Length: 92
Image (cartoon, rainbow, N blue to C red; front, side):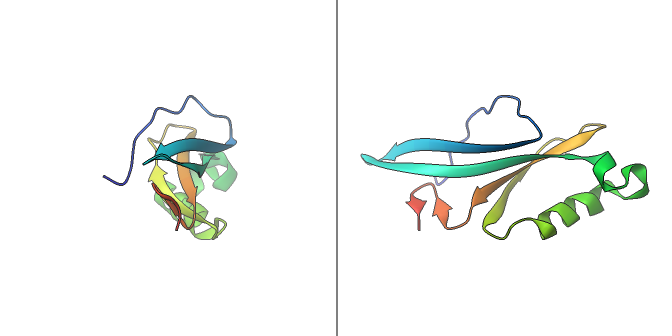
């Protein structure tokens, strides 16, 4: 198993999350970023929501990789990224 799922409390519009873990006695810090994408910021109803998600991912900082797309609401969708080069075992 390479991933562990944990509950993250409700977040604000943009939030960085650092998680310290011990794996086989070695401490690692995992870096995550959660962005709450507001539909209105991307043209509201005039742009298809799938296209908005694709655009956000495509334009996102390349130092971060897509990890998860959350459940959309009427107003927004959470998207989670992880710092590239890191895994459940820390920096590769």
